[in-house]
Length: 74
Image (cartoon, rainbow, N blue to C red; front, side, top):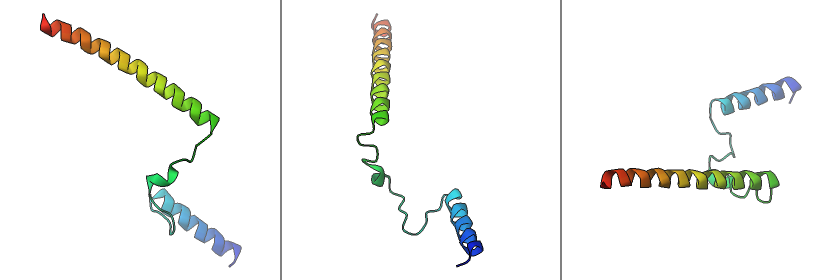
C-alpha cells in the first residue's frame, strides 16, 4: 500500500468518526470505559470535588424545601 493510499484510508476513517460512525471492531458501548481511570489520582480528586459539590447542593435544596414547606403549613 502506498503512502497516498494509506493517507486516503486514514482520512476516510477520520471522516467516518467525525460523522459519528463507528469503525469495524469499534463498539459503541459505554461499559467498555468502566475502570478506565481506576487509581488515577486526578480522577480521584475530581470525584471527591464532585461529591462535595453534590452534598452542598443537597443541603441547599433541603434547606430551601424546608423553608418552602414551613410557608405552606402556616
